[in-house]
Image (cartoon, rainbow, N blue to C red; front, side):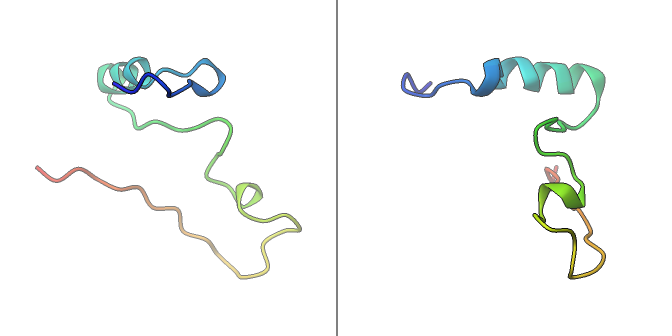
Length: 58
């Protein structure tokens, strides 16, 4: 696809996609979990955060 694209920490898109499709699970990045700690440096000061995932429509 793009020859200048470098894999982040050895992650390969095609491999991750295949694994997600085979398992029926959505990808969850272990380096950026859906938690307040991923968004706030000194703690959440705005209240409840709702994490949403885009869906592919049929």
